Amino acid sequence: MAKYQLLLPKMGESVAEATIIKWNKKPGDYIEADEAVMEIATDKVDSEVPSPVSGKLIEQLCGENDVVQVGAVIAVIETGEAAESIEEPVSVAPKPEINIPEEPKPAPVASEPIPGLEQLEAKPSVENNKEFKSSERFYSPLVKNIAVQEGISVEELDKIQGTGAEGRLTKDDLLNYLQNPSAASTRQETKQPSSIAEERIYRPMPEPKTVQSQAPLGYEKTIESKPAPSISVSGNDEIIEMDRMRKLISDHMVMSKHTAPHVTSFVEADVTNLVLWREKIKGAFEKKEGEKLTFTPIFIEAVARAIRDMPMVNVSVNGYQIIKKANINIGMATALPSGNLIVPVIKNADKLNLIGLAKAVNDLANRARSNKLQPDDVQDGTFTITNVGSFGNVMGTPIINQPQVAILAVGAIKKKPAVVETRQGDVIAVRHMMFLSLSYDHRVVDGALGGSFLRRVADYLEGWDLDRSF
Image (cartoon, rainbow, N blue to C red; front, side, top):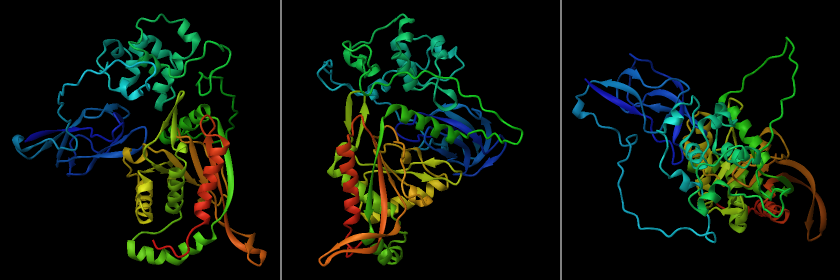
């Protein structure tokens, strides 16, 4: 008999850890190859961990609700094969480290672009620091690195209120705490940042010395927590505890409203040609491609074309820096059977034709509803579309999906009387009309850009070619 060590597999480029939600197998149970052993959750999605081998589960090395690092051993499975024949699967085995000598780089100067947080994440981890082991609270390696650089003790960290899952302290929580003057005045700095660039990483939005009473545009000030209003509960009321996903959604929505000044613009579009074209070809499309043609891929195509025309909508904000995204990755808000919401992302949407978009939309929507999405499926989005019309709503004012700067809501398509210009003059006709609404971050998207972008999307939908092939 051989013992196989099951590792927590890699679940995405930026996913370093996961929380154990539930064990599907208990010690002594037999496991078939590719059978789910446990359910895990990241900050993005919930997923299952299958076993690459068949055998008997003899040991669980972590419990439910434990936070486990990618590549860590989570279980031991006894197989019927000889020990020498058991190999670690490529998909979950940690990659060997190859030390490649790097050429010395010149020290950064203040006039050069300031590197992002990726550099900080790449610094040596302080995971084994004894001080952190004395705390019962979990801290990510990035939070620990910032704490060490800023000279914050474990005792001080434990007192900072966290907004992450289950009250965990996030990077943003710690940076907001560092920007709080009252907190800084009571702490003696034990270590200064080693360079100007590092100082800018920790404090990307310094307050101007010339205007002490006014925070600069984009400065995220620490929000004083106020006691929640008292709520009276009668004996007939039902108290429902939020599930994990609803808590994440709640925190993310509040954070977005606190971060970005929201503005919403509206246009009404005549999509009669589009509706007639889809009705004409949807049967042939499904027969040839094996996929249903909904309106969603059509909307995504129009948005991707508009972003190519006006790329400054496809950006993120880092203090006073505007990060212009190279890729156009469109997220589509999807309602789940549980009532929660998730946003799978179509990567490089501008490089797909309508057939490719339809296949991608249907695949992501089906996997979202069956809880089969992977962490990579819901990250790196640069713009989001939400279809409020699917619930019969004619318009909406959606909340921006941070760190993006804009989100489009498409309303229900309704038949309405409208004025149509003809060569013989204006006439009243029944047309297929819909409202489009764009919420955008007024720190970087002004009314002219936001309104023009929304109008451009409507123009692409209104100008749909009735003779177009798919």
